[in-house]
Length: 257
Image (cartoon, rainbow, N blue to C red; front, side, top):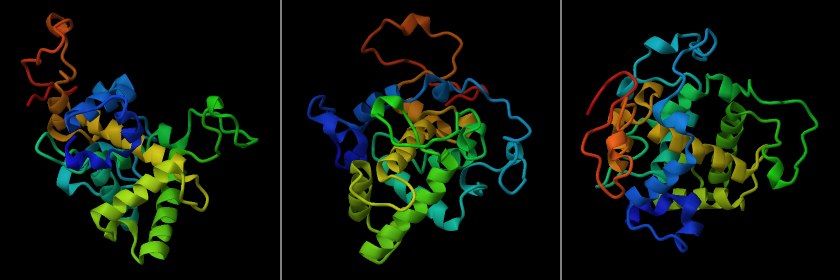
């Protein structure tokens, strides 16, 4: 496994059982954990509420890429998101990292969707910690998890290392992320493991989503794992196991690489 993949923290306990030889192998495995609808994007229409950013600016016409300005995250939170996803999926010779792929933009855009507001969740009390098989039981929706979690992690880092998370060097950031994953850091207002899981899941989703959602810029994630994207038909290649797909991916908007 490449040394730059050392920050793919969430599956390190499984790697001894299922060794992966490259970051491409890790991401092929991780993509199985991303909902299929996230990859190709099964719903691209925006409602009147989701089309508005936190500042009231219509999201549909906002700039993408280097010119993108966050609507939900403030400057400190935006710096944290960049620093964290950069360690979860760093760039290397096999493909772009999460930052290059536009994952921060994807996460920020998601914060103004019904999903991030918990609009489709049952959010009535009581809120008690139940058995794991009962699923998520907290009263915090994704927006809350990010706002409270980032502030708590920065407070921990400032107390422990005298700097916020984004100002730490890469090995120290990895140490903090590992502790979050294990739940060995006590955070105010939010469980460390829950916050890490939210961040990791959204990072995966942003890396493999259709570019229309802000992530997977230039379809770099799809190209790296050989995913055909939103092509109408690729049945001729479904059963050719182990064979490289000969054509590049196509996005929902019909863009090709």
